[in-house]
Length: 357
Ligand SMILES: *Cc1c(COP(=O)(O)O)cnc(C)c1O
Image: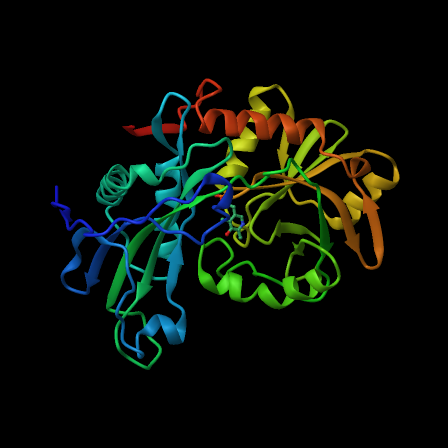
């Protein structure tokens, strides 16, 4: 296997206390980097001190947005091991995003080894308190200095690490969601299934308007009929109706969430009925009118589970489960975070030990 060269930082940063971490603002001492050039392939994998990067103002990513990213987490368990959650599933999705954006596929064994080595070197940055974690952000950018539209010939892949605080420092708080009826996020045949910056750029205007109206996020409907439910800004979405868990089926425009998969597998394991299918917003509002809508929650790496307390669509507002966290939402959160942090047995084999402290 290719050797991963390591250059250690002369100066090391200082950790702030766990309650001051926030999300995505603090970065560790080192990063993983690897280059690609057409003809040569991916090469020169290395770990170097974290710092600003030097790219041409003409770098293609800045003009045409050919880029992808991932988001995953590592945790410190109570018995002082550092573990990653479903890293291979995340890396497979990374390559799937690469394929969608015409970015050359990476050797995932090499990326996996680089990631393990990076975490080993920066392990003192993995925070300890309940709910905290080390957020892992792999990404690829196209860097040819060329102002013209084409598939790039030069790329750089990075992995940076960020210790993050507890998402729910003061307990669950169900969020208010606006069902978007004007803007759309992604369309079948487009980029919706890729983790790529363009999807976020496309979502900003709608989420800004929703925030001004007092909502936390928007719920996207399909881009053609604006009728079928897709997902929330950075989360997949679930409905509990008549004790059945329903989530929109993967259709090419929805992100294939790893937390979504975990929710489906855990709920099925508990013997619950879980269905992936098309579900319209009318159906959800009707179920509520009949008193059958029990819970709504989002799933994603950052929050794991996010209960939804209110949905607003075409001027109609519905309150879900009295604006309280539902029983299934709470149980799923406890189970998945328990597996991640080593408090619940990992019967699915989702946790990978990286190192000990
Ligand atoms: C990352 C992401 C999700 C959640 O995926 P996880 O793998 O569960 O973190 C959902 N929707 C979008 C648009 C995303 O980018």
